[in-house]
Image (cartoon, rainbow over all chains, first blue to last red; front, side, top):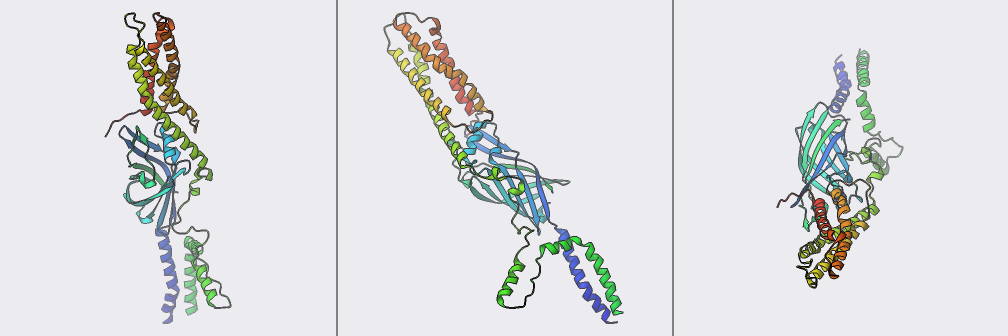
Length: 188
Length: 236
């Protein structure tokens, strides 16, 4: 009879271990995220002009696996609208938008951080045939049900992507082209 | 008793395993199969087994791979670059830059022709003094010639989009219908007026509209420059 507890222990140990695996899996299950709506706005400054170019054509997806989430956001360069078709075509030329038609942003977040009011992201941005990294870009998040509303600014510059600054009346535009990001994500 | 206890525990274990289907699936998909033992136990077989264990299953993406552009529904036609289209854009920009440069330089002879027009008409019936008139004619001719060069760059610039023009460029294009005919009419009317004055006549008929047509042309030309620069926010 003394052997019964030992046998029970032997049989229950794998059960207990299996339950722990199940619990760990349930804590951070694999999950996908979709970009539902977005507004990306670049700002360009010139002594004679202040211009905002807006794109609502971005697509995005997030894939969470093993507690880490990889996100990709992509928008066609030609989808940015500054309100002037000539300027937009010139922007397309300057940024080599026909040769590199998509601007891509990748970042990785711990799955446990997805519900935080602020998201600290290390961004990898591919644009105009070049890749730039922006560390610790802060985004603010408001969660409403399943909708995650995220806003922030990517501090992009022309030199990050080796873009020659366009000139007007021989005066070049400013190097800073911050991109304001306003996104609505939902779990798939 | 021992067998009975073992059976009870076994039954208790089985339903729980069946309920935890996700974990079972997870285990079956996320974990590789154990290497099948072979007869040999040499180092090569062992290393192969280790490699097999390290390889992630094909159906699961490697950690950190992340989504791709294809996952976003973007087709290769949308994501692949078009060097020919880029070359076309480059050529367009190059020609429009020249259009802008020549257009701005042309402001000088246009303005000078307008200013010199003050001395062009004969004063007090003195039809013999032609120097100021000749200067005006020369500046007007230079303005028209440079305007033609300016226009040629815009006309020859490749068209890369059939979308309707929006913003300041739309007004810039509308104003062509004013200053382009004006740039043709102004020298014709000017030549008529010049001939009438040289023959000792007072400027009359349609030639008397030379000044008005020139003024409208110059004004619309200036407006076209402002329009393509609009909206202007001076900020240094």
